[in-house]
Image (cartoon, rainbow, N blue to C red; front, side, top):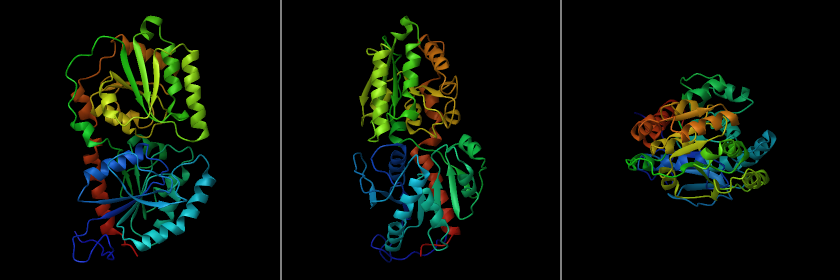
Length: 390
C-alpha cells in the first residue's frame, strides 16, 4: 500500500523503513485512568509496528510501566466540568501543538479527551495536517457538537460501543467507527481459576477512582439494605486513588463517614491505589461496577478476562459487555433496592454465572491485541486517503 511521503526527522532517518508515528492527545495530568491504561496496552500490542507518542500536561509523572514516550504542554487539559475552561485551555495549547507538529513527523493525530476535542477539530480543518482521529470516551449530555463532528469527513470519530453510538445518534460508516476500549493482554494470559470458591464471606471487589460519578456510595447503601445474615456474608473492597480535586477529596471523606454511619466498618474497605490489579481481581468472587453510563470500563473488561463475574449498572457500555445472567448480572441504574436484591441473590447462590472460560471469551475481541489491529487498520486507511503532514 502506498503511503504519503513524510519529511525526514531524527525519529525517521532517511533510507530506513518508516514505522508509522501516532501522536495521542491525552492532556493527562496524572498516570491513572482508563485512557492511559488503554494506550499502554496498545503500545505493547503494536511494538515494532507503531510508534505511539503521548501528549500530556507538564504535571504528568510516570508512575507505572511500561514507560510512555511523552511530549508535554503546560496548557494541555484532559477533562473539566466547564466547557469554557476546556475551550480556553485548548486555545492556549494550540500554538505549542502546532510547533510540535512542525518539528516532528506524525502520520496520525489521535485525540482522546474532551480537552483535546477542540484541538482535533482545529487540526481537521487544516488541509495539510496529518489525518485526525477522535475517540469519544464519554456520554456527554450535550450531544449536538459531537454528532456534527461525527459527520465531518475530515475527522474520523470512533465510539466505544454500539450503545454509545445510539446515544449520539450516529451510525458506523467511513468516518464513524466503533472500536472498544481494551484490557491488557496480560489479563488474558493469566491462568483461570479452577478450584471452587473457598468457604467464608463472599469477596466483592471494585476498581476505580474515588469520584462521585462512580457511585461507590450506592454499593454501601445496597449492602446496608441486606438482611443481617446475608450482609455478614459479604466483604467489599474498593481499590483506587482519590484524585486531587476538591470534590473527589470531599467524596472520599463522605464514603468513610457513610461506612461508619451504616455500621459497615467490618464489611467495607477502601485500601487506596494499587499496582496489583490482576492479583486483587483474580482473588475476588465478584467484581462490582456501580457507575451510571460508564463509557467502556477497562477494569470491567479485565475482570471478565480473569474469569470473574460482574455486577454492573444496566447502562452505558456495560449493556454491550456484560451478558446478563451469564457473565454477571445487571441492576437498574442508580436503584439501591434493585442492587440490594441482586447482591442478595448472588450471596444466596440464586445467580450462577457461567464458567470462567466463557467470561474470558466474551471479551476476547476487547483485548489489546484485537483492538490494536482495528486501530492499525484505521490508521493505514486514513494515511492512504488523506494528505500527509505539512
